[in-house]
Length: 129
Figure 1 (cartoon, rainbow, N blue to C red):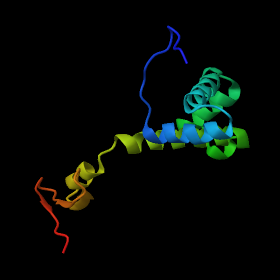
Figure 2 (figure 1 turned 90 degrees about the vertical axis):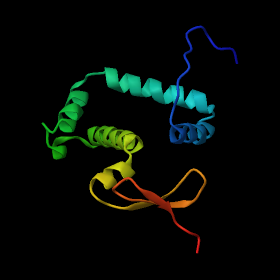
Figure 3 (figure 1 turned 90 degrees about the horizontal axis):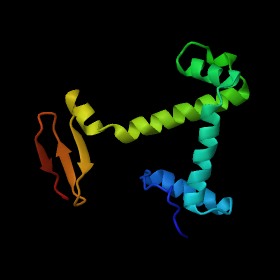
Figure 4 (figure 1 turned 180 degrees about the horizontal axis):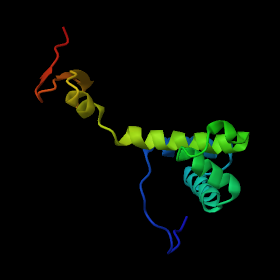
C-alpha cells in the first residue's frame, strides 16, 4: 500500500495497537484502518459541540451532576474517564510514587530478576532461594 504525501508517522501504545488489530478483524479492517476509523469517530464526536457534548464536558469539570446525564451522555462521560485513567496509568512511575511515601517495592528488572527497591534509593536482587 503506497503512502500518500499527507501520511505522517506516529507512535501508539502497544495496547491500542493490539486492540485495533483484534477489532479490525471483527470489522474487516486492518489494524491501521481500525485506528484511523477510531480517530475519525473520535474527531467527529470531539468537534461537535452540541448541547450533549457541552453537558458531558460540564460533568467532566464537576459542574453538572452525573445523574443529570442521559444514558448516551453517560457512555461518553465513561469513555472520557477511561481514556484519562489509561493515560495517567501509562505516565505514572508507581515505584517512585511509593518510594516517596516510604514504601519498599519489589519488581522485575530488565533481566527478569526480582529486585527489592527501598525508599532510600538502594536496591538489592532477591535470591531465588
